[in-house]
Length: 523
Image (cartoon, rainbow, N blue to C red; front, top):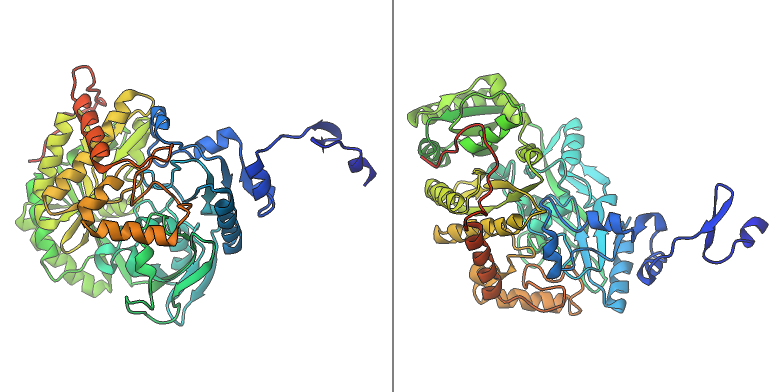
């Protein structure tokens, strides 16, 4: 067209006026040859939104890590992802996949800048296979979305994260999560039937099958990628198991006079023949936080929430068994209305973030038999660090607790950086009790040797063999790395975290969120 031909290079037409065209980086222009420009951004404000996950990090962390991506890209297909990976190899630029970023260990945050792949645009349900009881989805769909759409068809997912409204299917697979429903159906690795992935050399491959259950041998490598934190490739399609919806899901809640009673009741439930869908627990401080938000709640020292699933007649029997067990440990059963409210609120346990700028989360897996001891240890850590923190968690199987304490802080202040060591201290306590921290991310890759011994070297070799250019999510899981490409030795990261914990205890550094009620240690 004549009008357009008169526009000079570096200009564009808008509302009939000729205006200077925004200049973009060379990387942006290269990516524009792969995906539509509406799916690319190098705007600094938008990129800043991708420089943290659910727990924003202090700005001073940018001295050690380049958390700001150079460009954000939203792919629409496996082919897009493959071409982006091949471009990244050619240009020697890291690629970091990102889902809902509802985790708190920096796994979806760059350490060397580069290309941030926002996978939430790939969010479709591809097929609900009612004959084989599977559903095939793109990685960017949230668990809540998927759960609700399956419910309308008369099906449910076995397990999903408590952050289901924000967490994506691909993201939770990458973290190897356990969550709501894991007690009965297992972790996310047990839910996955098949995966389509773009590997670090750019090839598109599929593992597993969508129609039959594969044994966990070389014919099905899907569990191999669960928990890899996006370091071994980019997930582009997932097939999950689904189950017919039960006649009833019945929530039941019990309040206890002490944490010790609560822990003993949980242990006995795990040794009974009752198989709940879900078991979660909360301490007094969790409810004090909620009261500070204006919630009208009774006085609660400790609470257990159960969700039972099955036919109404079978649930009557299971509920009666649970009642007897809880009563033996001084548990007081709550009303049906209270229990149903707690079940509906299961996705919003972290809403207390409204009380402060930042929430610091910690998560560890510990033996059920050591739960009370772990709570006491965590309370000592909390007191020493001058924090106000709450203890929550869920029982992921008969022997394992997903222990999840949290506290509030302010990422704009030095104090926030020091409270990051809270997560490290909780992980150390878990190790001492025969457990382990959950996830490694940016800051806890140093734990890999402690977790796996010489197996850590094998894992590093697998990463190197699959990703010889170290392009896909570098500086995570198998090796911590600074923005200068220098590996962080385990002793260095551990020493730094311990120093921060010590600084947090110095006079003048103890800043507590004001609570309406006095915080209580574990009883």
